Length: 267
Image 1 (tube, rainbow, N blue to C red):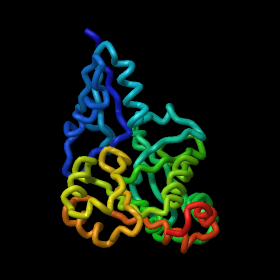
Image 2 (cartoon, rainbow, N blue to C red; image 1 turned 90 degrees about the vertical axis):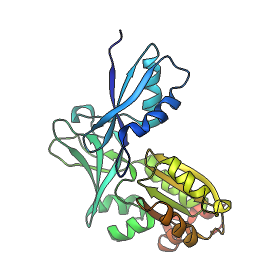
Image 3 (cartoon, rainbow, N blue to C red; image 1 turned 135 degrees about the vertical axis):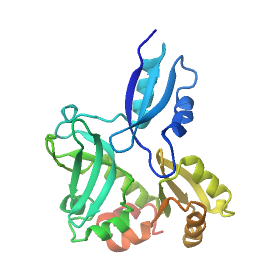
């Protein structure tokens, strides 16, 4: 009998959900493979732990790593300039703290200073953390990819900045000209069900999965953002919902993002 392989995913469980609720998603991902895969619990501060066994376990592990990411677990597996897609833990006046999946022997987080966020998202303008959070929907639980500015050294935190991919993702959100509702703490199925039963689904272009419990509802041009926000707030009372508005980003940061509208037009 093959030994079980245990993986710690870069996916978090929190709110009313249980770890085993996500076994079906893994089974769907690995469908057609000769493999047994199941969620068996959590590690660190809510990272999902998965057991994999079977003839195709190597293929399954690669699939899981590509689709969800694997937690580093130990600081020795990371070094300066590595990129990790963690989860925002908290925001402070001087920056934000990101859980990057390092918890042995101790939790080790990444600190993204306010100056780094200003430099990469706001052309160095003196926006506060609260203003940046409001513009870009930065809140606890949201996936956020960082690039480490130094080698991890417990107890940390390790300094980091937004990765190039993270900045590009936000630029694409702005350049699309489309308003979005960013939702944390609700499964993809729950969000799609809430949208479908809202009576306002005709205003929704897509429901994009950001993580196991993080999603983005992309709205069509001219959609009634406030009405959709209110309806989803009532249908998903346990979740956190934020509004991302490209037009507002452009108003505040015309120099940083104005060029993105040369071919798209003002939303």
